[in-house]
Length: 144
Image 1 (cartoon, rainbow, N blue to C red):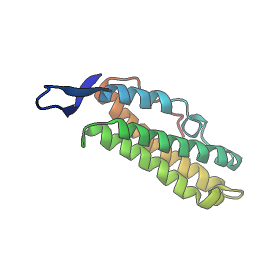
Image 2 (image 1 turned 45 degrees about the vertical axis):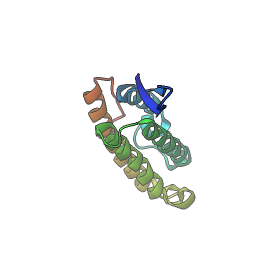
Image 3 (image 1 turned 60 degrees about the vertical axis):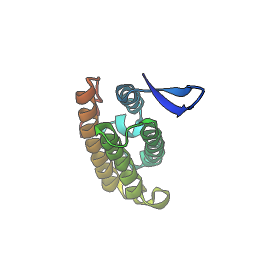
């Protein structure tokens, strides 16, 4: 937890400030959130009837990762880069499903599972970087 000045007064010698979360705290929240998301934790080789739930889970993850990015106060930094890569993974998965998930529907078992594997690989890679950098317990996603 840090303190960030938000405003200064000249003659009244005042300072306004707010508490900010550290990058490590944000990283831990992100790892804890992602550790229980259906799109990441259900086993590999899922039937395509799981696609709708996985797309909804990916959309929720994308939105939450965006919230974590908004909490970061530094304009650059490794955590920002890693979270952006995670968010892009969720966006790519959602885009692979097409409008209303039609590319993950009946007859598209292979496409769904390949997109799921790509997503998990990307998220696992970024999570390993984050957990290594901040010495956190990382994600252990199912193998494919």
